[in-house]
Image 1 (tube, rainbow, N blue to C red):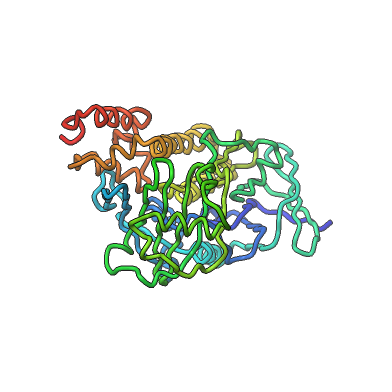
Image 2: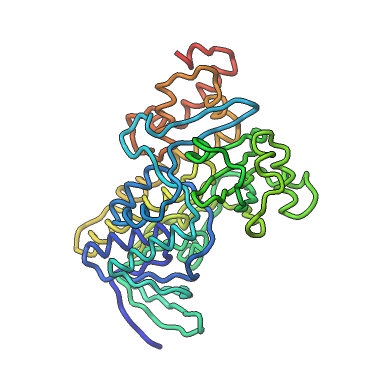
Length: 415
């Protein structure tokens, strides 16, 4: 069996893998990416959040992505029963980027993969990992190409950015179900010939269909819009017909978008994702780190998926480079705790979204602008800023405000 060696083997050429590979390559380490599929390929996570821009800039991808002329996104809008709550990313508590992009992920991911290749990192497509053996910090990895030919890679470090495939967690038996309740999503791309001019294209829209059921509307710059419906799996059983018929019936019930998307052309068969929240019991170990959706995927609400992918990818790449150059790295403190703290923050807001507490705060009449700016920072992905009370007290503050609102103590929320 053919054998080769590399300093760093990255599994997966999505955003987490490419930014991680960029970091190790810039550190002078021989880096190789293996990717099971071919690009472009469809994946959700099409609405980025501003924190991602820091990662794209650091990895050297910003100029290439900017040339693609993706739809610029300046905020997020929430609609519920005739009420509107908008967050402008330029009005936030934490310093950082005030905008980002909304983009078809097939095109976006391809750009990143091509850029990392230009930086000197080979990407082998249609190549999967079928086995791994660790010997201390070293690993022996068996890979298989599309012809079924197997070979061995001796790697000093592995970064698993394989996304939903969760290659290492599955091979090592560390994959586990996340704590969030199971949910289901139906989604599709459609022609958006009735899109109004102006602000409609500048943000993602979340429509509250019911307290725990919501619709996303993500406009792209090419005249296409992504539409998805997310919620309790039992909700979808209330409708009869194919997945396309079901999603059209749900959109028809929504007064905000039914006229715009009635009879619009769907560009592919409606896709379905069920019980998608997942995690792993081990985020790192001797000679490896798990990044991106391989380590944790919460929920599509608030669009945090790509941010966690690139945040963990950038960090794991830097730490792996330090370790391979002989420096002592405290992976528990510098990686696992750092990422998990932020996951816990977002998990609070996902939970409070679905139980209605966060919706109470979003849709309060005459909201306090300071509170809105602090929440805007959360939605922008700046969830490591402990000066922000909605980060520092994430597990209690939203519920305290919701309680005041439900008890009619509005002056405690709006003043």
